Length: 579
Image (cartoon, rainbow, N blue to C red; front, side, top):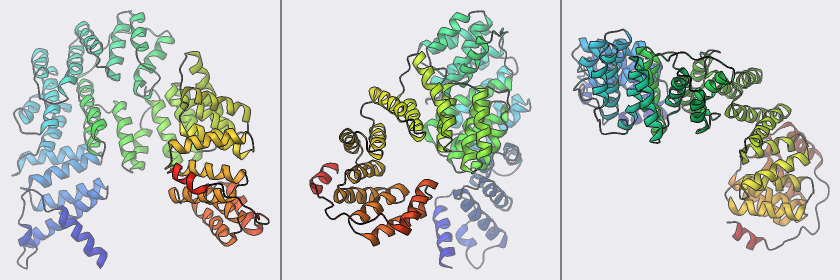
């Protein structure tokens, strides 16, 4: 009962600032009408579903509350919004259209959804009627301005469309409208003007990946391949952000001939809307952008860039199963197929389906040999402890980097760590040292190289120095403090080892390796009960097979006799320096 009361109190608190609707105080009184009481119950259930990240259930409950309280604009807005979050634009549109026929004033999101639904059905005049001159809020008003412009362009009135796009809304979307102007010109067949507009944007420093791909495509249609390649050289076409440009480069390298660029009205509107929505996603995070991305996909389901962004947002909001469905719908012919398969591989791995993860990883590399995809797949193989495959992929990345004089310590670090796990120690050291030449103060690289030497009893003084440097840079990192403690342990200075390993365990108490090391150090100074306690704890934290096997053996047989003189070494002073 106490739990139930707490939940109800939470829900009541969350509703105190809700807009006007039924008199909820009278609903709770003895004279409350059953219909209002039921509406309030559905409203509470909807609020709880919303904060529990269950948008479909929230939308259903808000819908029921709306049936019993049809004049409540706030409930209408929330119901439509939750259907958008759930990814069901058709239900959101149906509910929003019903609001135009009922007693409730049409809420901003409902207006925008109805306008998008009208646009995709070819009801272009209705778009302006719904949106023009309405109080929609700043961001919605900017989207409305873009959609109104496209409603005129779809009817062949390009000049009026451009006039609307020249109007200022006084927000960050204003500077992005140049891309919509280019897309409108492109739709109207004025490709020369579209190209000139995009070139002005590029020269001014506005470099939007999608727009750069359109600009390059227009250059190629004019036979200006050298100019297109020059444009591509100004950006990193192999980065994840430039998927379209990389796909275009592959087509160029394959000798494809390019025809005139054409877009239809729905695709053009979607291309315009995704620009500010992507900016919103970068600025805010959370789930707000998911609702708007589903609007884009309602206009153009083939806008797979929006699908990738949507899947990423779903995954970040712990809706992995929905992210899987979205990514699985990206077809093999899409420029985004490689990126989708790479993301799928990680999601499959999170669901412990290693076979599907490996298949998706192979699909990703085969579909898109972009560097960003290879790095992601290499990291995936490392996580799966498929080190042979990881080495093949990462060695290819590093080799290509050297060919183009790219200096990336991360790729070298990943390759070095992979080779160390394969016991290719000389090659591992070479890669790790190369990473340190680029970034000499990277604590993770300093620690890894130092720890690998300590663990093999090699270069002890130099290894100790590297780990001390890493610990000074990152005194709050449990795994680095653990390395320092383990360095003392391997040097036979067990008292110092215990102090540092205890500190590491306080920083990261759930790390299997740290607890294992602390148990070993306790045993060496004669604290056998504490040692066995730490080894027992290791089993709680999903250790790898090697660590678990070692711990089970130590629990049975121990580590031999304790050391009679475990050493001291000025621990207090060193700990003060560390902290």
